[in-house]
Length: 268
Image 1 (cartoon, rainbow, N blue to C red):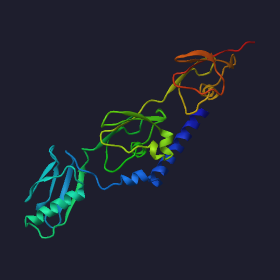
Image 2: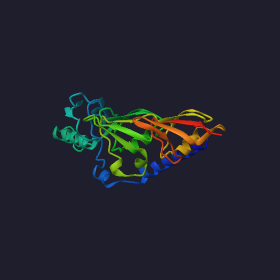
Image 3: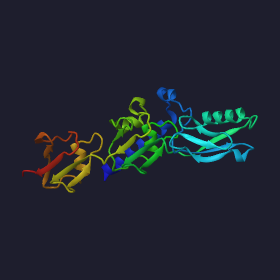
């Protein structure tokens, strides 16, 4: 119960720190990749308005070839441009065609489809999220409601461009280290797996499977499992670790994924 409460408090503190870091930290590399505007792509929905000329505007989806068809000026290349750039192109087309002398063109994006990121696994709200601005991994995880208690303390990032996968440490993310918090790209996937687990059996009050908390020791593992029974001894714990010979575990020894702990009876 105590460990569970500590885990929840730690998770809450990490989320608070993450929010603060996202709000106040603007790394230099992010500034270099500053938002010059969302770059339009195929299947995005846009609304083009010409102020004072309602019939000259249109709401449409960008075609697979990247074009839209406008009243009066016809086919316009939209994909690959920001809304500001596209508005400028349309303005020049209207003027060059002699339709308007000084039109004011505004473009709003109704649906972000061409550039998205997938967020899956143990997050509050998994789903497909638009890259409507520059996002780092931390920001996108926060947008998805952050990691659930049952989630691991690391995240997998699979790049959409080459399908290479890297592992991100959540504590490094919330501490605002830009080199540990990559900028996301279209087609990327963030996946939060289930928390790593260990197993404890024998003379404990609540044997079973438990999550491996960060820097967790055998002493904490025993507390999480309800403590040693009257017939057991915390000095007689056998550790079975995959690929390693069984050994006697020390109370300050760190617990790892898939460890099996067997608490034996004390000798009277």
